[in-house]
Image (cartoon, rainbow, N blue to C red):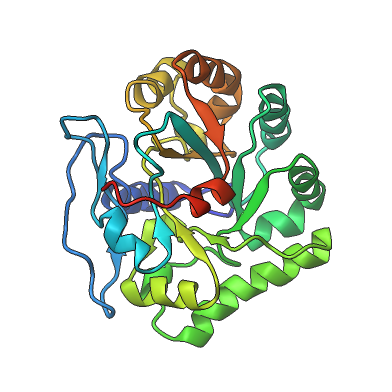
Length: 274
């Protein structure tokens, strides 16, 4: 959901916007509710917020995802939030995010790309020391939905496993998030075969472009009204706005009666409410 290279050209930024508008559709209220892709087809994760109960539906249902050990939302009867961050590079904000998470006693998940672990090993080790989960966002952040061969798919995940183990001395937790939300049924089966839980999301917003950061008000307008029971929230740790609002955001969610769960907890309590 971002470019790994920190200094983007204008052309790259425009291309990224076009891809994300097609792939995510998470913060605009636009509807995508397609059939499950076949094993040979690639699809983009999308959400529909136009529901009477305020719980978003994915373009693939939770029940269908569970066949492949995949999730996008938790138990919708519980006021629990599962906070996750994606990161392909360090942009100077992760330390502040970690400090805020510690202040609120929140354990999050960070889905990292190989470039991040290579260039910011100390922050990765701090994530582990602080009790956060580090998940697999692939070694090079490709379009995984376009990868049909199992060996190529495996190399992307196992490459990150190895660099994580070399950096932390621990095995990587088995949580996988497809870059840009691009996936296919064959991909989900491959990840499942490798022992992974594929983790999509049920709430996100446009926070990934460094030169188009949302204002605090714009962020709150997306993240507060659309929070919901069992929400798997996707934020980017490269976002200056996210770093600046996180303390208030967590406080306001707590005041709304929410608690924060971990992906381990989510994995143990998969539900079929959708």
